[in-house]
View (cartoon, helix red, strand yellow):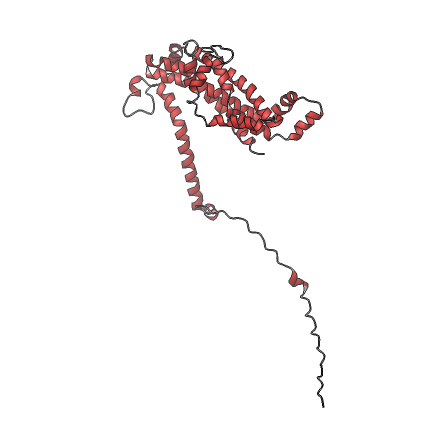
Length: 324
């Protein structure tokens, strides 16, 4: 009898029930704020001892830096009111024995500071005018007009910043002695100060960076209204560029005011000298306190310009970096 294999039906295992919906939900992890570690934790600064230490250190640092920058100015102003014997005394005195303000009037008359200040004012005003005229035009062309070889020109302009000023001193002097193409001699003329001051790669770079941050929609709207590139520069670009124009103006004036080597070379005539060269040329014939008084008078215009326009300097230097 053959044994037949009996196949038993396989029972299907019921599928496991789906997990409840609440298990599918993932708990959203809250992002923890990024913590920055330092020498002093924020918790320590909230304590009474931490506040005392913080304000003590802050006051010490601010006072130290203030004294480091203000003390030379104080020493110069008080040194002018000291007698020659007080200036060479050892140890030096911090206060003059007598407040003698007449030494400033004596320095004004003996060194003829009025002529030197007038000359320097003319040189600074002309350098300011030509710097804004040429550097603004160059920066506007490189930023908005975008000529064919604009990037090459910008690279050449920036490369001039890598050259030490003393290296180009001799070629610049030879150019002033005999101006290329025209053959003019510019010695003892304001043009010897004005023309080199106008060619400043750093100013062109600052202006271009600021012009890059101006929205192009403003220029396109002016173009739709039929404005020419010159009209756009005058009516759109310059009004919104007042901060950087103020910075360039201040730096251009101060650079001419404090320059010594270049005016010494190109302005040998005593009637054409700037304030720094004039004081230096007469320093050997004057008492030391009179010389210091002359230096104080020569420093007053530059100090006043910085104190009045220091907010414009910070606004102009940071405005160009907000975009671009």
